[in-house]
Image (cartoon, rainbow, N blue to C red):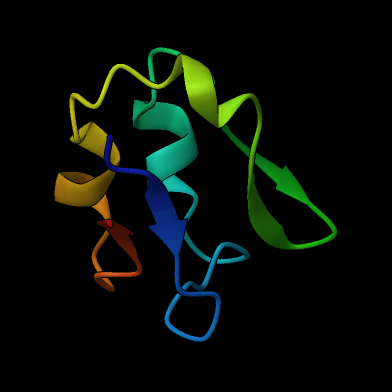
Length: 61
């Protein structure tokens, strides 16, 4: 099963955070100015976070 991965070098959560707002499952959260996964096993793989990220920092592997 694919997993959500975040490229922290591309991510600029201090100016964005759209992925956190878009995730209906509340899998993504901000901690110490970084996006973290909260219970990634609960992700429904709708990929909304991928589509709203303007920096392409989120992918599935």
